[in-house]
Image (cartoon, rainbow, N blue to C red; front, side, top):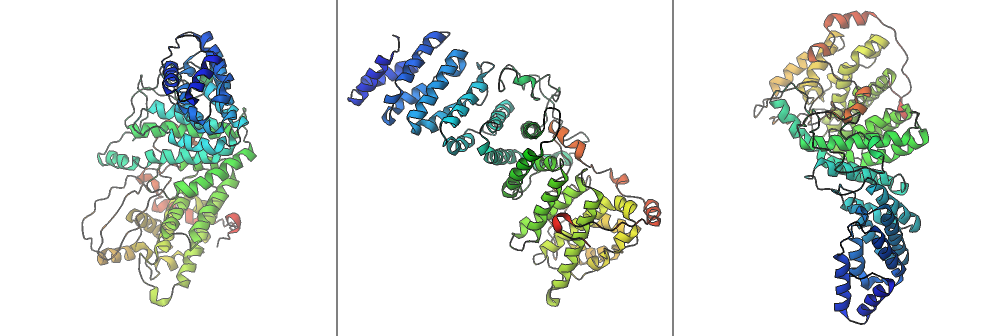
Length: 568
C-alpha cells in the first residue's frame, strides 16, 4: 500500500463528505488490511499522519475511527505504542464523543493475548491515565466499560486473574472510581462464591478427609510467558505465577474455587500493598478510607447475598488491622440488627455475622467478646419484657429476630466459655441470668439448630447455670418431623442450607458467615488472624475442667459496649 500521508487521509475524508462512499470505504478497508509486521518506523509515520488529521474525524467518520481503534498497535514496538497513545488522546480531546469507544478498545485488551510484549498492560494504563488527565469525564465512562469487559465465568483462570489485576491497578491513578471498582470486583467474585457451598456439601457427603480446596496448580495452567502483568518487572512482584512464593505445584480440584482463590488473593494483596508502607507499617488514613469504602460495599452487596462463604473475609482481614475498624464493623452490624425498619432477613443475617465474627476473630479481645454477649443478653431480656402477654408463646414468624439473637448468644457462650470463665469467673455468667431467657415462654431452644442447643445445654449444665435438657426433651416430644432429615455436622459451627419440615416448628435456617476458609492460596491472609474450631472431642471442656475453672472466681468489671452501647 502507498504511504499513508495526511493528504491521502484528508482526501478520503473529503470523498466521504462529498458522497463518494466507495472511495472512502476502499481507503478504510485498506487500513484494516494493513500487515504491520515489523515495520515499526513506517507505522509510526502513519500514526503521525493520522494524528494531524484528527480535526476532520467528526462523528460521521466513525467507520474510519473504529478501524483505527482496532489496529493491533499494542503488539508493536515502544515507539509505535507511544505514538498511538498520543493519537488516542488527541482524538478524544478534539472529539469527546469518541471517549467511550477508546476506553472500550483499551479495556478489551486487559485480558491475556498470545503475542503481547512484556509491557503491554503498562501502555494500556498509560493511555487511560493520560485520558483521565485530559478529560474529567473519563471516570463516568470508565466503570461501565470495566463492568462490560468482565470475562465470562467459563473462561480460563488466567483471563480472570489478569483482567481483575488490571482493573484493580486502574484505581492507583483514577482514585475517584476506587469505591465503584471494589463494588464491581466484589460483586463479580460473589458469582463464583455462591456456587461453592454445593461443592462443599458434596465433598462432605462423600466423607473425604482431605482439604476441600487443595488449590495447587497444573504445570500449564498459569504460564508466565502466556500473559503478562503491569510493567516489565511486574511478574517479580506478584504471586500467582509459577515460581512465586504463593504458588503451589499440582492440580486444583474445583474450577470455580480455583478462580475465586486467585481473585481473593489479588484483592488481599492489593489492599495490603495499598495501605502499608514498603517496610510494613500501616498507613492509617489510607486504611480508614479503604475500610469506609468496603464497609459500604459490604452493606450493599455482600450482606444481602445468600450463600457467600469467602468474599466477606476481605472485611475480616481489613478490620483485623485496627481495633477501631473492629468496633465500627460490629457497630454497623448491631445498628442494623436493632433497627426495626431493617428487613427481618437482613437483621437475622447481621446477627449471624456478628456472632461468627466475634467467635472466629483472633484479634477480638476477650473484653469485646464479653461486651457482645452482655449486649445480646440485654437485648433478648428487653425483648421478653416488651412482648405482650397474649403473644408470649413460641412463634417463629413473629419472633424471628429474637430467636436468631438467642441462637447467636448460645453459640458465643459455647465458643467463648472457657476464656470467659478463666478471666472473669462464674460471677459474669451468673449475672447474665440465662435461665430467664432459656425458660421464657418464647422457648428459644425450640428454634435453635440442634448442634447449638445441645452444646449450649452441655456447657450450662457443667457450670450449673441452667438445666436445658428437660426443655430439649420436651421440645422433641412436641415436635414430630413430617419427613426425616439427616444432618451431618462435621464441626461447629458449619451450618449451611439446613431445612427441616416440622409439623409445629421451624428451625432457624441460617449459617455462620465466617466458617472455615477453604481456599488454599488466599488463606495465607486469613489463617494468622483466624480461630479454628477444635475437633469435637476436644472442643468443649470436660466436666472436670469446667468445675475446676468455676472454683477460680476473679471478677472483672465489664467495659463499655462498642461505640457507646453499654453491656450488662
